Image (cartoon, rainbow, N blue to C red; front, top):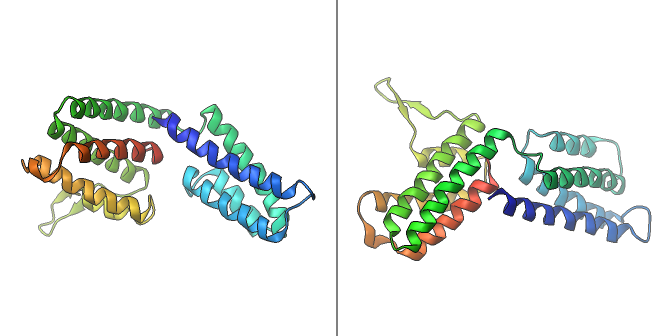
Length: 220
């Protein structure tokens, strides 16, 4: 599962390095417009791959805050991008617990995939959505979001998946992902309540593919 995302990330980083090298091949440094492009792409890639709390992000911010011209900033940032690419290629970015959970979720997704291929779309939908909900809880814990809330009667209750999705959508992933999760959770509700005619096998297959990509893109 993670290997697919690794390849995509590495491809993205290579394209940034290539952009820098092509722009700088006739001179020692890029011109200002190319430097801005490299910095913008590098910032987006580092934030996407590493999040806000990584050493890569801290180094990148330090370079931006330093008293450098943009052309020199781009040269320094490319060093970070190259190091990040190497660590991705060597598999050093994910913790052991993230890899274990990733393998567990992949097994469930493969089970759901097998079920939908055999014609059991409803069971497949339940398993895929259960994997998604479980991952939302793991992501919430990783991002410091409480899984519980205090009800009006003073009791502690578990937040529903959509509640966690709304909170996670503020900083853990994009608004597009948040809206897509809302749609998949609606499919889950139909499956759980026996409204089997409200979705078809093709939608479940797309759900499974999306959940696999989402879990890989945002490891917990």
